[in-house]
Image: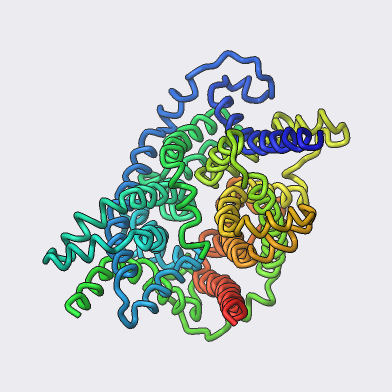
Length: 271
Length: 294
């Protein structure tokens, strides 16, 4: 009797947790398909419409430009950060040479620096260089956040790969670069993919840098949300449509690598 | 040691990135922190003022307020997140279809843009048409028409709520990782000996989770100190300056008042606080190791 009670209790709790997590997201999705009038009521009876998505992509909101900016910034950041970080992670994982412990600590400790500290000098430098409101500026600052993080994650993944086949290949006369390319990278592929997606998510959702460094030309999606706060009030239906545009690609990525994702979340931290 | 040069060569690209994107700006901001620089008046760093920017902070109400606001925010959000994450981890420890489903659902808040989370909660707590505000009003008539985000205490509570909603899942996964390393045999043995679930948790599981929980606590503290996005999109620091955290205050000083010297000094104070916490944490972990190996 007590057993059955516990069994149902546990499932009820899990259901409650899922609802608490899902509800705000579902509500945003519903609102994205509501007409303005329905968006300002909490009724669930409404005729769904796609007009919000049409509106946000047309003048004056031009979400399309923001999508291009977000994709360009996130993709370029990932393309620079992940290969560089992968090489560094391999070095940190496989070689035991003096001074590298300090370097590893140095790179990791940059993760503890608040973004507001580095954004001030960057703002001033980009201002002098005429790079404010450009995608280049955003890519540079995002590299600061993402690179140490990916090194940390990938080191955890590479540490877990046994070194036997690498050593055998080295004895057979293969070069280190060949070993990295042909043996380590394929084995670390799930880790690299996870790190890449993590890195993409971080950059895609980044808000502070984009808020300060962009005005019109390089605005990214999260900053675009703020523009739906107008003098006529907050345009919730449009904001939600933009929110859906921000969220859907990220959710798909996160769910695709779901198994590795939870491992990546704890990589390095729980040691 | 043919590989020695190579081992460093592999580090060069990543290290150059860190140098250019973090270490150089840090050094630059350190220099500015000791200067007077009003960006609306001059384009180059002004006169050297020694520690003035730092000492000014401790007499200025805006900074002292943000320090207080940050303390309240960090303490409540860390304690709540830690409690929820540990409870959820215990709940999710077993396997089953519902457990797997919940685990997958838990990935979503972490993947969501914090700025969007702020916006969504602002919408849902609107007293006129917000679904949570209305829902709470329907269930508890006393809460009808409560101006959630217009009251200093309540808007702080909602800010904490959004942060807990955002981070608890991530911290739950970290706790689950820690739980996985606790051997089940000892627990089973204790259960057979008739120990209660309560005693098993406090006597066996919790002591072994100490290291992980400390990592979680420190990471969460650092994330909470940095928290910025939701302040902008949820409360805008208000009402008044009741939710103006240190990170948001520095942003205001820098990009609304354009006082670069003062903003840099404040940024370094925030970094100092974080460094102190990290050092304290590393020392705690080290002493913990010593006890473990002794």
